[in-house]
Length: 345
Image 1 (cartoon, rainbow, N blue to C red):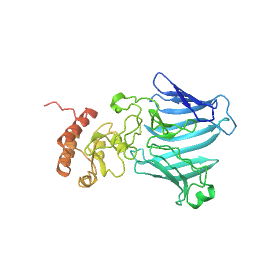
Image 2: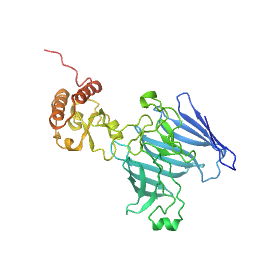
Image 3: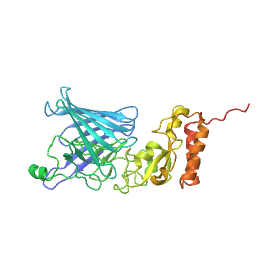
């Protein structure tokens, strides 16, 4: 696929994109002659990008490696031509979410911690030092395009904007990271073009992702798509895994994600139980506060535990019967051994 940009008075600029048989972007050829090759692991996560051919200077970045925690991008390291580290970054997120909290950066032998200020959809807007000074600010448009700041440095300092040009944050919408060479945002399963407001390839899950196969989300002020698959906000009493609900929850929806079965006792009696991927339900915060929290040792069965959680949901929330039925089904499908009926004696 080719992208052709035309500007009055200039020659057209053309960028070439190459995909492999698994529909992964593997090579980009830029108008200036530079070429980048992208590498992926067995799970389809991008783990490297390498600049091919001649590198402009010894200090230029020639390779970038990425670190992952499941589907969450936890960090990246940039390497120079000679193999030395130019910059290493680690990102810290809200537990069970793609909302960034902090950025730890190592560069030139120094380690710097910055706290990330995010908006209501979890998009990084500012990097603040430990003393509260703003060291980076992202001026982002409606569909993710960052506006170039033309204000002079002295004025930016006066207004409290980023004075240190070396400090910046590559995170964009939840689950996205900025690629400087193309201007695209890598979004786990696809690449997002902020100038177009859509992905550059069709949704891997087909029409399950919506009627617009290359569309992002209907409203980026309320919806997010951290995996590059399908974007939709969490609905009240929706049932799914904890991570799925948490990642799609946005500030202001007044919903809490409740484990059912509750995670503390479930971890004691259900083999292989992981609270990040366990069955959960989105319920209003005011209702969630009423549900008693189970603490201490639990010696009962998984069947008894689920029955108690269902009883609590019926007593303390307005969860409809359809959601409760779906929750029971999901638990039995995910943990068949724990709910296996014992033979009668």
